[in-house]
Length: 294
Image (tube, rainbow, N blue to C red; front, side):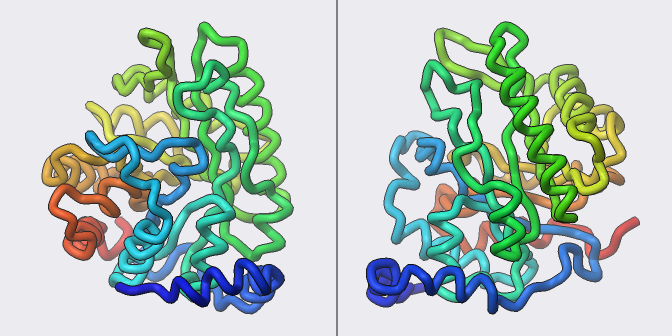
């Protein structure tokens, strides 16, 4: 679809207050609809310098193209909302794409890809106050735990505080945990069953309450064992994209049948499919979600 780039840029330059006005007037919806499922499009990668999709290191760099793809995805049946940083969510507000959508603000984007401080994932995005003031539905945080890097405890402590602050405001804390380590100087997430089981256990215990905590997890081997580690509702993430989409769909299909799994939070895999057909990719993913809770 074509977006009104001129109006967007004019509002950015001349009427910045329009963002707050639209946030205050936006028509909201319940977090969970009748199906009890959530399908969220993820778009917070650029703020951490993660622009790669497959073999293209700058696939997500063109903001206008990204916004077009997001607007296409958000219009598809079954898509409940979007997760992103302030720059992207505010563009979508100005484009009128967030009406009756679930909106999740991304909070810690300071762990830049390839940086020496990548594990020290500082909160450079949304805070709980702003999530609540913008009338959004939650805040998302990335928790990578490297047992050999003391900076991990800084991130853990900051995420625990964010879980507390979001719970005080009765909005979702979406926690994305990994056990990570460096390989040839680069941070790699351990996607083994054992590592993800430990990551889920640690993330579930963050904060003074888990009442509003949801988990965002990758699909790994023996997902039944991994997801049995916690009673918290969970959403499946999509990965870096660029791989075999049919294989990804099959993994999601199986994992979506687990009792604590409530849906998907997927970005690059659907926004930048190998064949370029965003509509088909999003519709296929939406079709995987069970229509009723069990």
